[in-house]
Length: 300
Image (cartoon, rainbow, N blue to C red; front, side, top):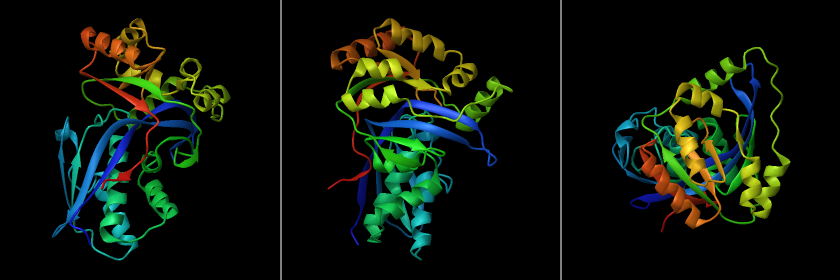
């Protein structure tokens, strides 16, 4: 058994998030088109006398360090499956915004799972790791896989998607977070008694990804949770407007928010939008990233 293993795992942006009606189990069926982008957390695991979690980086103080952390839950799940104790120290070096709709917690879960598998030499298959990921949370499987994928069901049933180029993004990080369950509940409230269709992936959006056409992708992006996120955090409207005025091809809430995502034509445009957002005073921080990028990866 090696002394430690470090796994690098990316953030995600949802270029389409179509939300269906409430299911009997309280979840919603989704057509969720994920794109992994180059903001990463690094998760390091090493043997210890007991399971513990530490964290450093921006907003590390908001990350739970107990057994509710998805990284800890991943270690416990893999250990239980292989009949061993989860006696590891998990250290998370955060760079993905916390509670920002970019799957930072899910990324840490996938990273810890892959790192523990390598540390313990359990030799779990890819299918087994994805099964555990799905048990941990809806976004965790994609954090393991990366690239681009269509998520069905709760988002955990993945179909890899072809991409024909690199897409350039700017992310505006808001103060504080938004609770994902609260955003879904607000989405349901805003819909009221209206009939909600079954979610379907946009053919135009999938074609734009396949051809690498940023302008076509901008015309097709959508997020059914955006009205709910803006309802709960009205200040997001000013951030979205600032990015659009700065020349972004598309402006949207990332996942359940409150991070907002701006698709740009090229790196120079991304720099321009980032500068304008920073100067606007409508967000706490601004990040530039491109995608697709690889999923969870063991670092040498």
